Amino acid sequence: MLKLFKPEIFQGSLSKQNYFEGWYFKHVSASENQVYAFIPGISLSKNDAHSFIQVINGITGETHYISYPKNEFSFKTDRLFVQVGKSVFTDQFIDLDIDNPGIKVQGRLAYSGLAKYPSKPWAPGIMGWYSFVPFMECYHGVVSANHVIGGSLQINSETLDFSNGKGYIEKDWGTSFPESWIW
Image 1 (cartoon, rainbow, N blue to C red):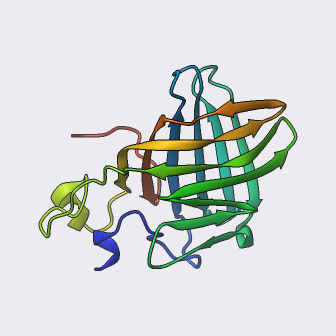
Image 2 (image 1 turned 60 degrees about the horizontal axis):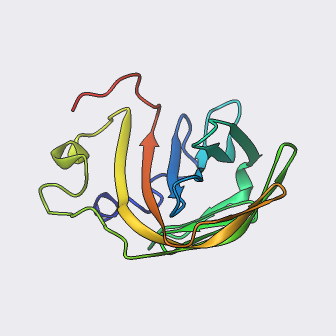
């Protein structure tokens, strides 16, 4: 039950099958000319259990999906801390070290002034009372609706400054991503 009131932490178990969990970290530079999202996660499908980092350039739409072995995924049980390969994702910072054909990302972005979604006993997150419904296909949580970013990233051969930019963090977990939403 405690996990229910902390949607930002890892909700699953690495022994589950037919399960996924992913965090969406969006970054917009102060000039708004750079937008990048990084999605670390785990996919525990029966035939291809693996961890991953997806990199999305929000300006060009270019996307990279980097697959890692399942055992390169680790997490903390008391707070948002996820590691995939050499990259670390928290609600205070991300440290990226991705070296894959087509995309290389290195750097650290720090977060301050997180706008956390309010939690109440009858509505522990963005899903409200739906959070209590067992066996839903997918659950959703908002970690920070808005925060300030500090730092820069080296993406391929270009240095991108995100200082004083804006960020957003959310996550999804369950058995499959829904084809449609009802709100």
